Amino acid sequence: MDAISQFPVGHSTNLVGLPTGLLASAAFNDYPQPLHIAGVRETNPALFRMLEDATCRDEGAEAFEKYMMAVFGIQPAAPGRPLVPHRFRSSYRLLLQGWGFDANGPQGAVLKGWVESRFGLMPTFHKEALGHYPSAAWMAYVEEKMNGRYHNNSIHLQLDLLYEFGQWMMEHYWLPGRQHLTLYRGVNDLEEHQIIERVSKREAIVRQNNLVSFSESREVADQFGDTILEVQVPRVKVLFFHGLLPGAFLSGEGEHLVLGGDYRVRMTYF
Image (cartoon, rainbow, N blue to C red; front, side, top):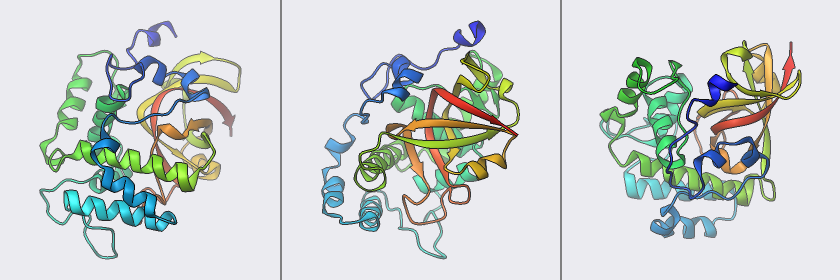
């Protein structure tokens, strides 16, 4: 615990108006506060007017895709249609697809870099444990997160809108009145994770990567490790989840992309 506590959890600044240390804490997860990326809703009022006019989930998703088409030229999902209409035009869809293949690839690095920029949370792992900065592992991560192939077409603004859209949809359609959802993650060796505190044999506070995948299904999580971590994730820490938009994004495992930090986990062993 002492060695882990020396690693910084995040940057001193972010774009959500809360201290990063608080945002990263297990206490925040227990008692979450509203989160909004500064200026996104104010500078994109047309999108949220369109969402207010929607009468169901599908119409909300359609409104978002139409807005992203108008602003960034991103075609709505359709069978047989490529994710990116022009190979030099990056999109949030390309990043989500890349994450689904390999969270430690360049698309994953760009997503983790966006979390750093907006929420102040630093990654703990990318291909290998990152540890203290600077290091060879950190330099490799920084090189990938700045990859010019994925940094055109205002990619960070696209992700800002994706987050705010997802929050709006959860509040109105997916999780109305709820602040948390129960998610699961399978691991093979918990000792490889940054354990902040062992509460009991079956409970601990574990530091997660700044962007991490969880599943809504315990049975699916069981396929990825013999220790199942059960967590209560605040709605405001969910970036994306399967079903939010049309298309096969993270759908195979009931996957949720979640902002990291220190989480209380309940462990089940098989």
